[in-house]
Length: 227
Image 1: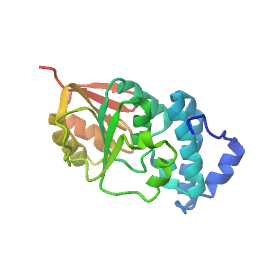
Image 2 (image 1 turned 180 degrees about the vertical axis):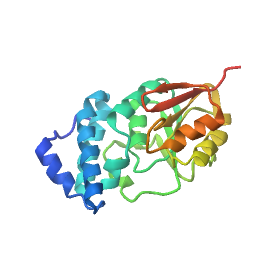
Image 3 (image 1 turned 90 degrees about the vertical axis):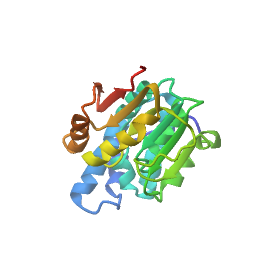
Image 4 (image 1 turned 120 degrees about the vertical axis):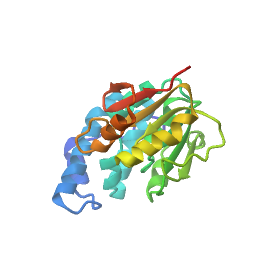
Protein backbone atom coordinates (compact mmCIF):
# COMPACT_ATOMS: atom_id res chain seq x y z
CA UNK A 1 0.00 0.00 0.00
CA UNK A 2 2.87 2.39 0.66
CA UNK A 3 4.56 1.90 -2.73
CA UNK A 4 4.63 4.26 -5.67
CA UNK A 5 1.25 3.12 -7.00
CA UNK A 6 0.01 2.56 -10.52
CA UNK A 7 1.79 4.29 -13.40
CA UNK A 8 0.01 6.70 -15.72
CA UNK A 9 -0.02 6.49 -19.48
CA UNK A 10 -0.77 10.00 -20.84
CA UNK A 11 -3.12 8.77 -23.57
CA UNK A 12 -5.09 6.55 -21.21
CA UNK A 13 -5.21 9.33 -18.62
CA UNK A 14 -6.68 11.82 -21.11
CA UNK A 15 -9.29 9.28 -22.26
CA UNK A 16 -10.38 8.34 -18.75
CA UNK A 17 -10.45 11.83 -17.26
CA UNK A 18 -12.37 13.21 -20.25
CA UNK A 19 -15.24 10.92 -19.23
CA UNK A 20 -15.42 12.26 -15.67
CA UNK A 21 -19.05 13.23 -15.36
CA UNK A 22 -19.06 15.64 -12.43
CA UNK A 23 -18.32 18.49 -14.83
CA UNK A 24 -20.76 18.27 -17.74
CA UNK A 25 -19.59 21.30 -19.73
CA UNK A 26 -16.71 21.08 -22.17
CA UNK A 27 -14.94 23.86 -20.26
CA UNK A 28 -15.29 21.95 -16.99
CA UNK A 29 -14.00 18.70 -18.48
CA UNK A 30 -11.03 20.51 -20.00
CA UNK A 31 -10.18 21.97 -16.59
CA UNK A 32 -10.26 18.53 -14.97
CA UNK A 33 -8.06 17.02 -17.70
CA UNK A 34 -5.52 19.83 -17.39
CA UNK A 35 -5.46 19.51 -13.60
CA UNK A 36 -4.91 15.74 -13.84
CA UNK A 37 -2.10 16.07 -16.38
CA UNK A 38 -0.46 18.80 -14.29
CA UNK A 39 -0.61 16.56 -11.24
CA UNK A 40 1.00 13.64 -13.06
CA UNK A 41 3.82 15.86 -14.32
CA UNK A 42 4.46 17.17 -10.80
CA UNK A 43 4.28 13.87 -8.89
CA UNK A 44 8.05 13.56 -8.70
CA UNK A 45 8.22 16.62 -6.42
CA UNK A 46 6.54 14.72 -3.58
CA UNK A 47 8.18 12.52 -0.93
CA UNK A 48 7.78 8.80 -1.70
CA UNK A 49 4.95 7.99 0.71
CA UNK A 50 2.96 11.08 -0.24
CA UNK A 51 3.59 10.42 -3.93
CA UNK A 52 2.23 6.90 -3.57
CA UNK A 53 -0.95 8.19 -1.92
CA UNK A 54 -1.46 10.97 -4.46
CA UNK A 55 -1.09 8.53 -7.35
CA UNK A 56 -3.67 6.17 -5.87
CA UNK A 57 -5.97 9.10 -5.11
CA UNK A 58 -5.85 10.25 -8.74
CA UNK A 59 -6.79 6.80 -10.02
CA UNK A 60 -9.56 6.56 -7.43
CA UNK A 61 -10.94 9.95 -8.47
CA UNK A 62 -11.01 8.80 -12.10
CA UNK A 63 -12.77 5.57 -11.12
CA UNK A 64 -15.32 7.45 -9.01
CA UNK A 65 -15.75 10.15 -11.69
CA UNK A 66 -14.89 12.66 -9.00
CA UNK A 67 -13.90 15.64 -11.10
CA UNK A 68 -14.10 17.98 -8.13
CA UNK A 69 -11.30 16.13 -6.32
CA UNK A 70 -8.98 16.33 -9.33
CA UNK A 71 -9.76 19.97 -10.06
CA UNK A 72 -9.79 21.38 -6.51
CA UNK A 73 -7.04 19.54 -4.64
CA UNK A 74 -3.68 21.22 -4.18
CA UNK A 75 -1.31 20.11 -6.95
CA UNK A 76 1.79 18.08 -6.02
CA UNK A 77 4.19 20.99 -6.50
CA UNK A 78 2.25 23.08 -3.95
CA UNK A 79 1.98 20.14 -1.54
CA UNK A 80 5.74 19.57 -1.72
CA UNK A 81 6.34 23.22 -0.82
CA UNK A 82 3.83 23.03 2.03
CA UNK A 83 5.45 19.91 3.45
CA UNK A 84 8.85 21.61 3.44
CA UNK A 85 7.42 24.66 5.21
CA UNK A 86 5.88 22.42 7.88
CA UNK A 87 8.97 20.31 8.58
CA UNK A 88 9.10 19.54 12.31
CA UNK A 89 5.64 21.00 13.00
CA UNK A 90 3.66 18.19 14.59
CA UNK A 91 0.36 19.81 15.62
CA UNK A 92 -1.19 21.25 12.45
CA UNK A 93 -4.60 22.68 11.63
CA UNK A 94 -5.97 22.79 8.09
CA UNK A 95 -8.89 25.08 7.22
CA UNK A 96 -10.66 23.74 4.14
CA UNK A 97 -10.65 19.93 3.97
CA UNK A 98 -12.42 19.41 0.63
CA UNK A 99 -11.94 15.69 -0.15
CA UNK A 100 -9.03 15.29 2.27
CA UNK A 101 -6.02 14.85 -0.01
CA UNK A 102 -3.99 17.63 1.64
CA UNK A 103 -4.83 16.52 5.18
CA UNK A 104 -3.73 12.99 4.34
CA UNK A 105 -0.53 14.24 2.72
CA UNK A 106 0.24 16.29 5.83
CA UNK A 107 -0.21 13.24 8.07
CA UNK A 108 2.02 11.17 5.77
CA UNK A 109 4.68 13.90 5.79
CA UNK A 110 5.70 13.34 9.44
CA UNK A 111 5.12 10.06 11.33
CA UNK A 112 4.25 11.87 14.58
CA UNK A 113 2.16 14.68 13.12
CA UNK A 114 -1.48 15.17 14.10
CA UNK A 115 -3.77 17.06 11.73
CA UNK A 116 -7.10 18.69 12.61
CA UNK A 117 -8.91 19.66 9.43
CA UNK A 118 -12.03 21.83 9.25
CA UNK A 119 -14.71 22.08 6.59
CA UNK A 120 -18.41 23.01 6.91
CA UNK A 121 -19.24 20.17 4.52
CA UNK A 122 -18.37 16.47 4.60
CA UNK A 123 -17.62 15.46 1.02
CA UNK A 124 -19.18 12.10 0.01
CA UNK A 125 -16.03 10.65 -1.61
CA UNK A 126 -13.77 11.54 1.31
CA UNK A 127 -13.88 8.06 2.87
CA UNK A 128 -12.74 6.39 -0.35
CA UNK A 129 -9.51 8.39 -0.30
CA UNK A 130 -8.90 7.75 3.39
CA UNK A 131 -9.05 4.03 2.70
CA UNK A 132 -5.94 4.43 0.53
CA UNK A 133 -3.74 4.82 3.62
CA UNK A 134 -3.21 2.65 6.67
CA UNK A 135 -5.15 2.98 9.92
CA UNK A 136 -2.24 4.54 11.79
CA UNK A 137 -2.26 7.46 9.32
CA UNK A 138 -6.06 7.84 9.45
CA UNK A 139 -5.94 7.85 13.25
CA UNK A 140 -3.75 10.97 13.21
CA UNK A 141 -6.31 12.98 11.21
CA UNK A 142 -9.31 14.55 12.95
CA UNK A 143 -12.10 15.76 10.67
CA UNK A 144 -14.16 18.60 12.10
CA UNK A 145 -17.40 19.66 10.44
CA UNK A 146 -17.12 23.41 10.93
CA UNK A 147 -15.92 26.59 9.28
CA UNK A 148 -12.44 28.06 9.38
CA UNK A 149 -13.54 30.44 12.11
CA UNK A 150 -14.43 27.57 14.49
CA UNK A 151 -11.81 26.75 17.14
CA UNK A 152 -13.20 23.91 19.27
CA UNK A 153 -9.89 22.12 19.87
CA UNK A 154 -9.14 21.00 23.39
CA UNK A 155 -5.42 21.55 22.81
CA UNK A 156 -4.28 24.98 23.91
CA UNK A 157 -2.06 25.79 20.94
CA UNK A 158 -0.98 24.62 17.50
CA UNK A 159 2.30 24.73 15.58
CA UNK A 160 0.88 25.81 12.23
CA UNK A 161 -2.39 26.66 10.48
CA UNK A 162 -2.86 26.04 6.76
CA UNK A 163 -5.60 28.27 5.33
CA UNK A 164 -7.19 26.92 2.14
CA UNK A 165 -10.85 27.61 2.79
CA UNK A 166 -13.33 29.92 1.05
CA UNK A 167 -11.24 32.62 -0.61
CA UNK A 168 -13.51 35.59 0.11
CA UNK A 169 -11.47 38.26 1.93
CA UNK A 170 -13.78 38.42 4.95
CA UNK A 171 -13.51 34.64 5.39
CA UNK A 172 -9.71 34.67 5.16
CA UNK A 173 -9.57 37.53 7.67
CA UNK A 174 -11.91 35.63 9.99
CA UNK A 175 -9.63 32.59 9.86
CA UNK A 176 -6.66 34.71 10.87
CA UNK A 177 -8.48 36.31 13.80
CA UNK A 178 -9.82 32.93 14.98
CA UNK A 179 -6.51 31.07 14.89
CA UNK A 180 -3.60 33.49 15.24
CA UNK A 181 -4.07 33.53 19.00
CA UNK A 182 -3.87 29.71 19.12
CA UNK A 183 -0.45 29.54 17.48
CA UNK A 184 2.63 28.88 19.57
CA UNK A 185 5.30 31.64 19.47
CA UNK A 186 7.12 31.12 16.21
CA UNK A 187 4.13 29.25 14.79
CA UNK A 188 3.14 29.61 11.15
CA UNK A 189 -0.04 30.64 9.40
CA UNK A 190 0.19 29.64 5.74
CA UNK A 191 -2.27 30.99 3.18
CA UNK A 192 -2.73 29.13 -0.10
CA UNK A 193 -3.35 30.80 -3.50
CA UNK A 194 -1.73 34.09 -2.54
CA UNK A 195 -1.41 36.20 -5.68
CA UNK A 196 -3.59 33.83 -7.71
CA UNK A 197 -5.60 35.81 -10.31
CA UNK A 198 -8.76 33.79 -9.64
CA UNK A 199 -8.50 34.10 -5.86
CA UNK A 200 -7.81 37.77 -5.30
CA UNK A 201 -9.62 37.65 -1.95
CA UNK A 202 -6.60 36.00 -0.31
CA UNK A 203 -4.26 38.83 -1.30
CA UNK A 204 -6.90 41.42 -0.40
CA UNK A 205 -7.35 39.95 3.08
CA UNK A 206 -3.62 39.87 3.78
CA UNK A 207 -3.31 43.47 2.63
CA UNK A 208 -6.19 44.47 4.92
CA UNK A 209 -4.60 42.65 7.85
CA UNK A 210 -1.25 44.33 7.09
CA UNK A 211 0.60 41.12 7.71
CA UNK A 212 4.36 41.08 7.47
CA UNK A 213 5.46 37.77 5.99
CA UNK A 214 7.09 36.03 3.05
CA UNK A 215 5.88 34.61 -0.24
CA UNK A 216 6.91 31.04 -1.05
CA UNK A 217 5.50 29.79 -4.35
CA UNK A 218 1.71 30.17 -4.12
CA UNK A 219 1.81 30.59 -0.33
CA UNK A 220 1.96 33.59 1.96
CA UNK A 221 3.68 32.65 5.24
CA UNK A 222 3.15 34.63 8.44
CA UNK A 223 5.21 33.79 11.53
CA UNK A 224 3.90 34.60 14.98
CA UNK A 225 6.25 36.73 17.03
CA UNK A 226 8.24 34.98 19.75
CA UNK A 227 8.08 38.07 21.98
